[in-house]
Length: 420
Ligand code: HGY
Ligand code: MN
Ligand code: MN
Image (cartoon, rainbow, N blue to C red; front, side, top):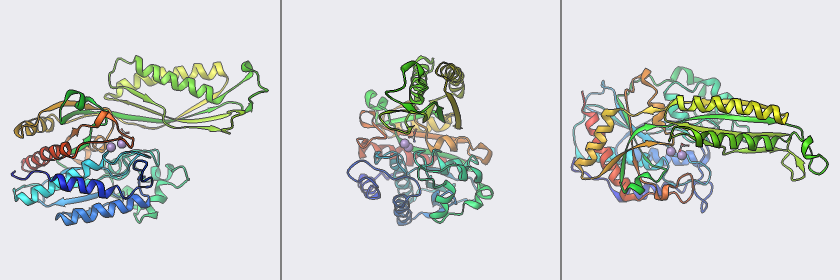
């Protein structure tokens, strides 16, 4: 295809989207289904129409910018990512892949290159778990892994349920269980994303062909101790909920460090203490646990040791610990055919590329699990993150690298759209 990605478009779209932000000047904060997210969606909706795509939406808030193919009966090819962010995050995580997808379809349309299969540049709702504690809301729904009762059981810190938030912005969550999983099988999905680590930068490659996507296991842990006086209670008489939580957190870190897997991670990102006063021993601690790896066996092996370690801490400290598993997702190994297309597509354009495993999860993780509705091929391609920084206002990727990734994306999507 003679078209190359427009650096101007990509830069302009990324900058313009950043106006929809709750923390201007302190990174980007755009939680799913907030006013900022809805304004950002309508910006993307209009942009998709302006480049000639037919825009559809589902009741999970997923947006589909479709470029019809010659044979609409054939299963389509998807690309896309997310536009919601973590608090005070960057403006490339997810967003780069959304605009690369739209730009790729604009290039294909402008080139006039024929394609049998329809192409769709998508925006998946709520990839970040920050607001409702569940990740990949839109792609999880498409995969049939998010149901009406889940919408009512997940709420944000203000107590708004995911169900209510969907209704508040005009979607119909009551039709969730008929509408999902998506009924139209999909032939293949290829997502561009920033790497969120420093492997590409350190190895000096502008593009990475993703071979596997690590999956998250998320749980909420609660510790019930005895609230008491910080000065009046001797050290040996305490049943300190925070100190038990701290010991459990350090246990998680030690198990992840000692694991044989080089991909396993363990993180405690959220912690709430009650009553959260300097001169009161906390009686109650609630915290998040996030465990990732590229195989579910790695995670199961860690969890076994984690639970027995918790039991020992619970008995020794005379506290009560509960663990509530939110999701225990399995990793996706990317389709070798797509990985090979990305490697070859890069070589054809004279862009060196390396194979890479994704530590972060992405919407492609959910799409890779929906073989029951026909996605048989899932792949990703990465562009470098400066210093490996992400989920941080310093997150940065060069537009030139995004454009290189978009060129490879466009050529690979076109090949996939012409496969029988
Ligand atoms: O947390 C993740 O892995 C993703 O970036 N939301
Ligand atoms: Mn993210
Ligand atoms: Mn992301």
